[in-house]
Figure: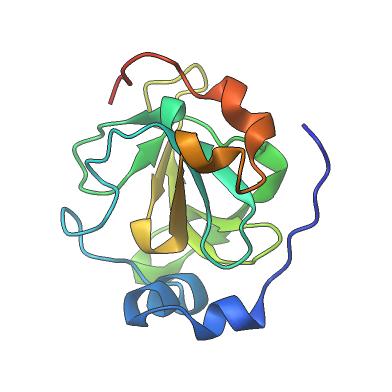
Length: 153
């Protein structure tokens, strides 16, 4: 994929709503089953709400039953950084956006994909780009990742 530059954007941070700020900047978690994308089946990609860097394709999304959007893999593995999270009395693997440094959620080894991973992501950390707007918004190179038929979510 083409190399693009994405950065943490102070102007974008200023425009975040309370939940988006809590999740991305304060490492928060939104309520399950009460967020924008947990049941979404629309085709497109999910980008970091702060930096715009591409994170997940709808074709990698599946229904995990957890109440948060879940994905088997990121679009660009280099855009997702993993860190050890020892909060809440347990050890988990946190995922953050590389360029925006936004807290996204966590990755768990219980997913259905080829690597057995489940990226459990907060909707508040994401902005969805529908398939029909991907080209116009500068994400046309990722159109090949989006299935043309109904999604398996």
